[in-house]
Amino acid sequence: FLDWGTEIVWDSDINPEGVYEQLEFSLGQALNAEWGLETQMGQFIVEESGSGNDLELFAYGIGLNRKGDAGDATKVRFAYYDWQDYVDLIKSGSILGAGGTDPETDELKVITLYGEHSHEMVWPIIGSKKTVWFGNWAHNLEEGSQVSKPGNDNAYAAGVKIGKAKKQGEWDTRYQYFYVESNALPSAFVDQDIAYGGTNNTGHMLEYAYMLRDYLKFSTTLYVGERIEDVGGDDLEMLRWQFNLIYGF
Image 1 (cartoon, rainbow, N blue to C red):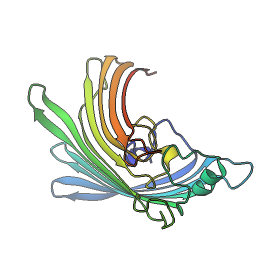
Image 2 (cartoon, one colour):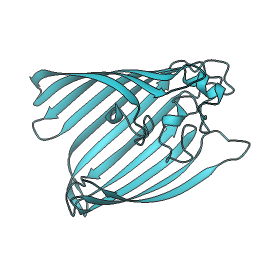
Image 3 (tube, helix red, strand yellow):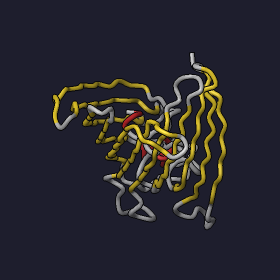
């Protein structure tokens, strides 16, 4: 499910234990494109607890794929994430809220919609590059009314990626806007690099990557963000600049 959403849904550093089932169907040719349907289910043990119920995730998804004759492609993904006992573990102190999810939230039953469209696009100065436009929306169906600030149950992300860094000398750059309300998603699993990490964050991300060798990538990422709701009366803002050197083998 990692490619069924952006960093607002999954921190790429997290790999839960479990199993998943996937089926793909070809829908044939129509409107100058090849169409396909994809379904996916997953059952994961996310956190084992010796003193209470284990945190489990049951996930279900369906997606539509389109590959155009001109080389363009479109993906649409709808998923439902049933986080079992997540709020109970926050209340017990087994999982920290990460500055986000209200412990009085009823449950985390989250629906997400993700879409992307890729094509070759001619840009000023840099010329023709593969370009991917993407957007992501998430909504918690069971925030409840007893939270301190109800109505904080949505999250959004949108952006664009230009280029493709796969071989030596290739590069890509990516921009993303994100807006993640407090009770929209499990805060411990939202990317911890965006703003202050977790939920209750909004801001911008700009990334550049360059292949020094076929097996060695340099990347730098700038995050500019702030809390949506003040924490402790403070209007917190964050600027983070990261540098990475990634070796592949």
